[in-house]
Structure formats: C-alpha cells, structure tokens
Amino acid sequence: MQRLHSTFSLAHLLMVVAGLVTFVAIAVVLRDRAAVLEVVVASEALDEGSPIARAPLGVVEISANDPLASFFVAAGTDVTDQFLSRPVAKGEPLLLSDLQAADDAPGRRTMTLSVDQLVLSGLGLRLGDRVDLIATSSDGASGFVVADVEVVRLPASEALPGFGAAAGASWLTIEVSEPQALAIASANATADVDVVRSSGARPLEHLDVVADGGGS
Image (cartoon, rainbow, N blue to C red; front, top):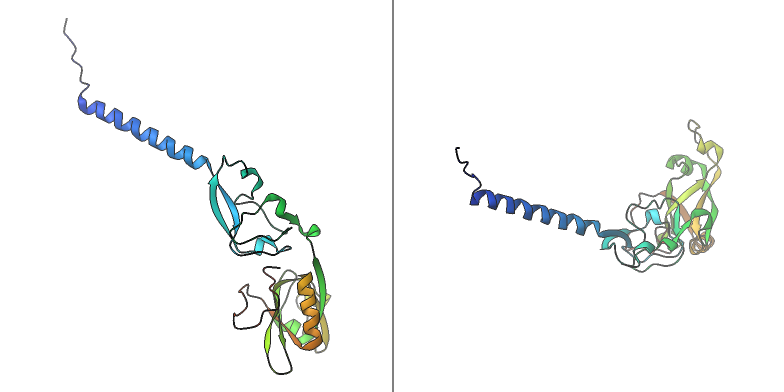
C-alpha cells in the first residue's frame, strides 16, 4: 500500500492563523461600531421656540450602552416642523422631550406687515419663503429687526402666478416668536421697515441685530 504524505506545511499554518486574526479584528471593529450611537447636539446656544430643522446642529458619538442614550435625539431623526420646548446650551445634546410640534410650539405668533404692492411683487414671494426685516431710523442708522422668518400667508393675487404688479398698499403674514413680534412692533413705531428676501445667511455682524429668526 502506498503511504500518503501530508502537504500541510508551516506556510499553510501561518495563512490559517492570519485569516483567523483578520476575522477576529473585523468582528471587533463591527461590534465596536454597532455599540456607537450618533446623537444631535446644538452647535450654538438655541432659544426656546427655535425651529429645529433650521437650527445650527452637529453630531457626536456616544456609547449605545449609555443609560441615557434612549433619551437623546439620534442623528437622522425627522425634525421637520419641530420646535424646541426649552433653551439648549452650545454643545448640549438635544433630548426627545425637547421636540414640540409646530402647533404646540411655545410663544409662536403670526404677524401681518404692511408692504407696498410693487415691493411684494418684485420679491416674488410664495408661501413658505423666508424674509428678513431691516429697520432704518430717521438719522439713517439701519439694522436687522428679525432674520430668516417664514411667510405663512399672502394676498390671493400673490399666491397665484401670472398677476401683474400694481402700485398700492399690500400685506404679508409671517410667523415669529414673542420677542420678535415685540421687536417688529417697536421698529414699526420708530423707523421705516423694509422686507427683503432671506438667503439663509446670518445678519452682518456690524449691524445691530434686534432679534434673529434663526435662533428664537
């Protein structure tokens, strides 16, 4: 009978060991990644009533085994039409209990502004667009009253395309916080207030910002 010789060498053994080490390393990495949870934090201090979808937010990683993990807002959570129910400090994680639906948001108001029809038509505003308000005093000083606030109602002629602009008085309605409403009322009583279409950028730093729509 012919004797069979084993072809299993030291090289084969090293290959098997290397494969096992690689498998264990991958398993450890995957386990560690599975144990990490990304949560949402405030990149800047946020006021009560701030619209979360437009707030400056960041993401940090925490252990999924953290006993408080289930209380935090996870990255990817739908925050459309959600507002903050309390002030949140810079770097602080957002809690699920901080989220409030738009209908329940604290201190939200709608406010109607008088505006020239030519200006309104020239801006080409539609429902859901965002605007800034700039006040100019009698001595020529100017500053933002509010920034990045939402247009929630327009005259019927502006809500439908195809209507030509005509001179005369018109109006638009915006959604604001309580401090913003007071700032606008004060500005209207003491200065000329212009409506401009918002680009989403923060107001220029050298101007006097009375209230900021992105954080109130």
